[in-house]
Image 1 (tube, rainbow, N blue to C red):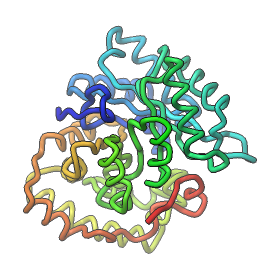
Image 2 (cartoon, rainbow, N blue to C red):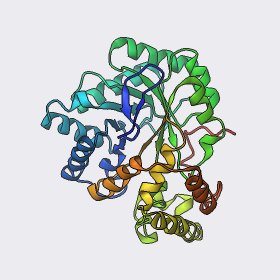
Image 3 (cartoon, rainbow, N blue to C red):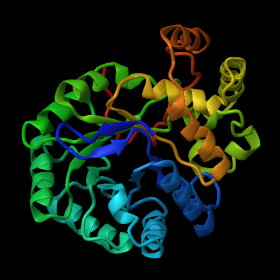
Image 4 (tube, rainbow, N blue to C red):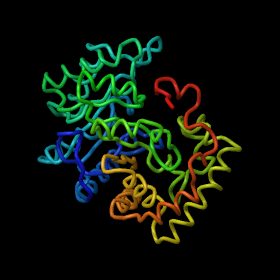
Length: 330
């Protein structure tokens, strides 16, 4: 397993993590047993990063992870554990970065996880009623409290990162990044490199488009997120399948599962880039982990770029309602 570092002076962490949103059932039901099997396989493979959030299944993901830690004494010390808060259930205020809200949310997460601290605590969505410096000040105090060893921000613009970093070192920034979503290349990846901030890439296999078994149109219409997502509605869905067929063919020609090649591409973007795919299936997990073992040559990367050039995807990555919260930038 490839190893990198969390932030400039943080602990070592595998350059691949497991995104535990899948444990919450967002892409179909996930049992406790399936989720624990994934965590067992991660541990065996040397994956040392688990990423979750308080809103994943209204705490279900954290509960599942907490139970796994309880059932596996000693496992907690082997992992860099991350969780997030800042998305509110209050319909009148969807995002809340008030100091008391973030700390109380973290306290509840710690209780569900069965731990006294997390290694990384993110603001899940930046609340623009606070300045980035004020939010970073709150995060700094949470580090001082001992409840978080390091802090991060999710779905933010490069300028927000720089302003926050001036108040408190930001160990990690999390955003969607894959061959189908290249926006972080417009300044966010560069800012992370400049500040020695780890870039944590969620949805690195393009919400299944970059695998050998993409969601069927019928299945996509049965899941809340994909049902209204522009890339999963017609005619975009069929166009995206047609485009990624070329990637699947290239992966097969190179001798890899498509998901493996997608992960390898992500890792090849920099030592500070950490893909965190999610799955409830151990066979799919094996394909994802295999991507960490692939060394792509400049010629390989050029071939991938030819079949999926920047901007190939049909449809925006989010619908209008899904764009509420993430910061756009150019």
